[in-house]
Length: 151
Figure: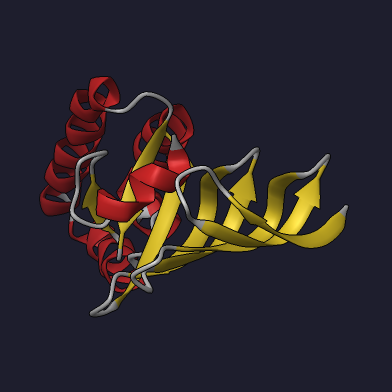
């Protein structure tokens, strides 16, 4: 693994770890207007965790495999808020963990979250995307520039 700097065909500049001359590892993509993403890059794609600055605010981006999130985070550990911790929504995760002792309320919320995750499986190709702990989609506003990096 080497450290380097590349200018992609789209004009975006990448600085960070390279494998075989391609972005892979920790790095930073910067657009000409100052918008940037800094975090995990795997095979020239934004994956894992990172932060994006869109010109106004920092956005925490998290990619989670949709099947692991749905079946492990939501189905197996959803009653305890496992899926909320996975996507970085720690406050809601702690609240859900404490709430599960109340009984019917925790069970209803568990089923709502699990059914929501099942319904969203078809909306994503590979990974669920969360921006600041909330659901984000391929066409979400944070992806206005991110799409140039990802595809």
